[in-house]
Structure formats: C-alpha cells, structure tokens
Amino acid sequence: MNSLNRRDLCIALSSFAALAASARAQTGEPGTKPEIMGPGLSSSEKVLNEQHAIRFEDLPVKKTANGETRPVMQGVLPTGESVEMHETSLLPGHMPHPAHKHRHSEIMCIREGTLEFENDGKPERVGPGGVVFAASNVMHGLKNIGDTPAQYFVIAIGRES
Image (tube, rainbow, N blue to C red; front, side, top):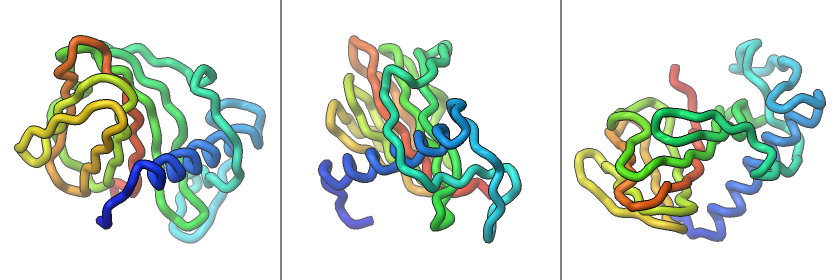
C-alpha cells in the first residue's frame, strides 16, 4: 500500500460516512435500505450509492463488556467493494477481542487514547491522529494501554467469502 496521509484518510472517511447516511435517508429509517441486486451482489447486500452526512451524536450506541460501539454503515459500494464502518470506545486495559486475522482489510483511525496495535506479533504504540492498517489474513489486535477510554473508527473493506 502506498503511504496514506491524514488529509487523504479524512477525505476517504468523510466519503464513506456520507455514503452510509445517504443509504439510511432513502427509506427514512436508520441503517435500512431496499435490497438491490447487481453483479456479484447477494439479495441481502445494501448498495451505498447516495451521499449524506452522519452526525456522531445520532449514531446508535451499543454497550459491550469492553466499552461501547457505534455502527456507522454496512453495505457495498457501486464499484463492488464491501464496506463496514463502526466507532469503538475501548476501556483502559481492555481489548475488543483477542488477536485474530480475517480476509477483509481494516483501517483504524484513532481519535483519543493510546492503543497498542499487535502487528503480526510485534507491538506498535499509536495515539490520537494515528492510523492503523490491518492487512488481509495477517494477525492483528488492539489493546487500550492508556489510563482513559480510547476512541477509534474502524473501516473494514472486503468480503469474508
């Protein structure tokens, strides 16, 4: 992957957020959209094809044992890429789950706190404004190593099958 600067990442993040919100706006219900079929799409995949803004305070909050999460969007871009995005608030000393690997790739944008990124067995420290890239099929994990909750966005790109 070529280097990605913060400006480019912010533009991409804004675009993904706008696409998600527009899908919700089409039906008037958060997170819902009529099913659309297309090349390589199943009947249950939502196509994210209209722009819209999402306010952070409007995202639904789901409490977890490790903190909380806010789902932002999930669907398929008109160009075929599967995208899922959520925000996580992770309690000090906690991990969202053990280190793992999966087929899709992930970009994590750190808003607050200090995280340790397990990069295929090697720990890397990352703080506010930092970006983590977890490549497809490579072991990775996160742990909040700070004294305050850590907040970060995760953008997952790709399919699992």
